[in-house]
Image (cartoon, rainbow, N blue to C red; front, side, top):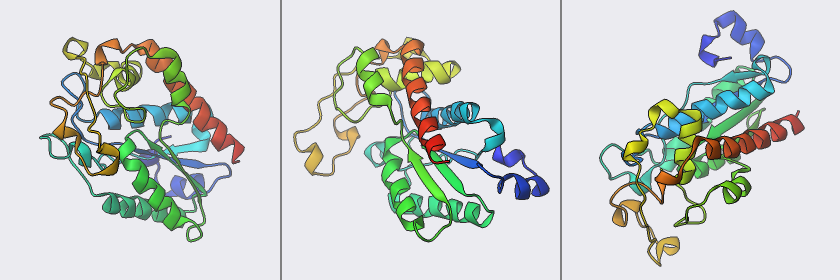
Amino acid sequence: MKYNDLNQERAQKYLQSDGMTVLLPTGAIEVHGNHLPLDTDCCLADALAAKVEEKLGVDRCAVLPCVPYGQVWSLGDVPGSIHVDGQVLAEYLYEIAKSLDRSGVSRLAVINTHVGNSAAAKTMMRKAAGVLGMKIYQFTYPGANEMIEKVCTSERPHNVYFHADEIETSYMLYLCPDRVDMQKAVSRKVTFPKDYEYSAVRWSEFMDTAVLGDATAATAEKGRRIIDAVVETIVSILKDGD
């Protein structure tokens, strides 16, 4: 159920019911080349949360509106991107969690589809631990890597990061196909600077288009197989925590 569809009476009863999990999608507004929209991460967060809700059961979930702004320092200087400092984001997420705790929510799962938000979500969870009475999870595509290795064919410029490439474009083709323009998809050979892991370097310093690899290799079927593995992992962890 959508959290914002609840009324006052129903919210009081529904949010405090046994086995209830509130899902908080978190995304970003950030450039993703010319074949994907600025709100790609938000589209994916909402769609992934809906998949998790479907598996857990609509009577056991309340899905919050997506937090649309995130930590996008790496591409934050490119027109179109909107960057929120990680400390500000962590405090913002904590205030959301604190409000849910006051409402009697016992479990919160952050469904995050922008890797740059992960540190802020972790900071929020650590601040909440031992202070708030709820269990908090943070999921950023858990279970994806093994399936990515099986189904994706293009070379990855970085073994952790992905952006508007075969991986993320496949996610969009599966979850939000109407928002993808494959006629504008490109392949970009990107080389990370040797000192990237040891210094502060924006992606915009070595990328002319915000595509980290080969978007032309993306398919909806690849996206389906990876996302299904992600949903299965999230649901399994949440059910184990019941």
